[in-house]
Amino acid sequence: MGYKEIELKVPVSLPEPDLEHYLRKKSGLRDFSFQILRKSLDARNKSNIYWQYRIGFQSSELKSGVKPQAETLVPEFRPRDKQVVIAGTGPAGIFAALFLLKSGFRVSLLERGSRVEKRLESVRNFEKTGNLDRANNYAFGEGGAGTFSDGKLTSRTKSISPERNFIFSELIRHGAPEEIHYMTHPHLGTDNLYRITQNLRKELLELGCQILFDHQLTEVEVSSGSIESCDTPTGRIEADYFILATGHSSYDTYRMLIRKGVAFRPKNFAIGFRAEHLQEVINRAQWGCAKLPNVKAAEYRLTSSTPDNTPVYSFCMCPGGKVVPATAYPHTSVVNGMSYYKRDSKWANAAIVAGINLEKMLGKEVSAEEALFWLEKLEASYFDLYSNYTAPATTIQAFLENKAAKNLPESSYPLGLADADFRDLLPAPVISPLQSGLKQFCKKLKAYETGIILGLESKTSSPVQVLRHPDKLFSTYENLFLAGEASGWSGGIISSAADGLRIAKQISG
Ligand SMILES: Cc1cc2nc3c(=O)[nH]c(=O)nc-3n(C[C@H](O)[C@H](O)[C@H](O)COP(=O)(O)OP(=O)(O)OC[C@H]3O[C@@H](n4cnc5c(N)ncnc54)[C@H](O)[C@@H]3O)c2cc1C
Image (cartoon, rainbow, N blue to C red; front, side, top):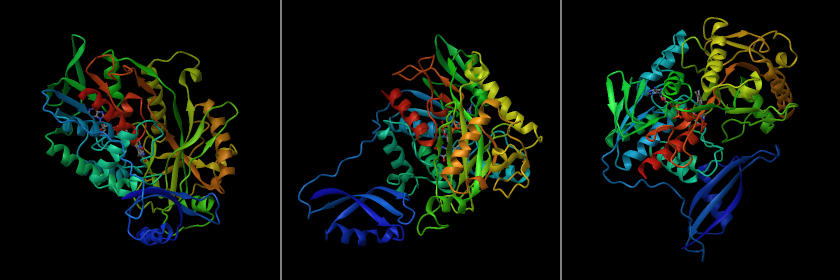
């Protein structure tokens, strides 16, 4: 049995089930098995758009070659008389729990929100009535911040291949489509994420995990230089290790940790707004036509160079999706984006943000607590505008011309838009970079100026970062670990899950 890999251009019109027949013709092999290793859309030439495939063939007709084995993580099970408390059921918390349970630890998983079924009801109710449930919303509740998202599984973090392979295999085992292993831009959609979250919960319970929903970790108790226990609504829990995977919206948890002496520093982050377009506009700009057979919806990722070197870029694009009210706390307002697996709504949205260094912007030293306070105040100012979750908005054209928008077009955002001037809503130093960036995006994507912008977008990453031991990964106390976005060392579903795994691996030795 031999093995070989080949690159192939395949017409977009070819449905994937017909691929085998196509491969038989192209490879000259009669008896073979194959695996898709990579699949990406090449739309650089709009008159010749095709799928670029990398295929691995195994066949007795091949005389040499061996199929390479993907590197992955293998938890080593042995009974260990150690208890781990994990707070947060987002990607970082869930994957840390899975790995530790499979390694033989006892795990208690605390989640401030409820099961994803109840969380979904709260989110739907919020979108209908504007009444926010403070424990169950787009940021909080089982599954974490990415549950009602586009579920993009791309990550710019380098050297996490074993973790990524582990995560993808587990996601597939719990209901994700196989294609996530080979698509260059894999995504799940909120419908898959909802099911996968339920399936992962079932497995964690089968592995003996104690899952406590509606249980916020409110306090950690320090004794002789380590964390001895934590407080929850039903009492104190003692453990050997504490992993806080509480995401970057959990301001109250950050403040509690700072009070307990855990060392944080402010870090660069980004703010801006979400741009929304008709998906057809983006399809035409990227493909030169409104639809392509067997391709869902066009994506984009844009970067710009601004005169003062402020990075301005698109982030977390949701093709065929909708803009959502993503705040975690009453009286603050932020937006984000989500979509279903089919990506078939008529809208496309993406964050357009400018990077900021708060110390440079304010011209003074800033503590981690001040950085949190600064961001929270900005998020509150968006709520205060209308005393509800109406999103301030304008057209891209009007923003670029420093004018008021004449008419706001329809939007997918469920809680209403109101005309606003972002020059009054965002800090002055980011206005001109955002205008400069948007101007460049209008040149790169045809008709980009027909879109609207709505705000606030402030959740691309945490404004603070915990100090960690470089190898052992603990923070301040030898048995305290901050995982995922709460740590400020990851951003996005995959890098946060990978961070949870790295910490679990570190604990299991
Ligand atoms: C609407 C939306 C769309 C997104 N789309 C994408 C995307 O397409 N792709 C992508 O890669 N990323 C996306 N993200 C970002 C992604 O969701 C996060 O990067 C990721 O979820 C971070 O994982 P985490 O486990 O570190 O934290 P989180 O997912 O934030 O999970 C933290 C969990 O901790 C719980 N919690 C908080 N405080 C406490 C406490 N004190 N005690 C107990 N529990 C607590 C919360 O309820 C939550 O469940 C999106 C985010 C949002 C909001």
